[in-house]
Image 1 (cartoon, rainbow, N blue to C red):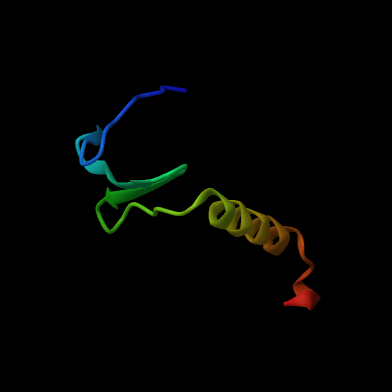
Image 2: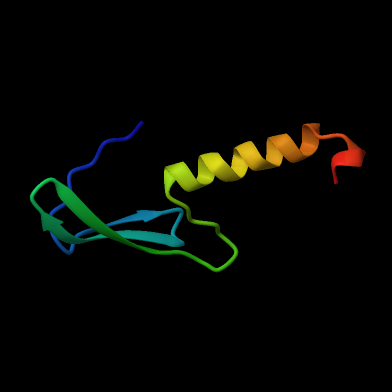
Length: 66
């Protein structure tokens, strides 16, 4: 894992296509903005985990359940 320090309004560029910018810092809450191409899905970790779990359940379910 790469760990970087950024200040307010500073950015990180990923693969030349994705920009992660620090938008606001309120105490221990950091607001980030993400600019990414429309074909790149961007999710919060808990949403991504739920999507993966749902996909796994769908793959493991019997055809009768559908």
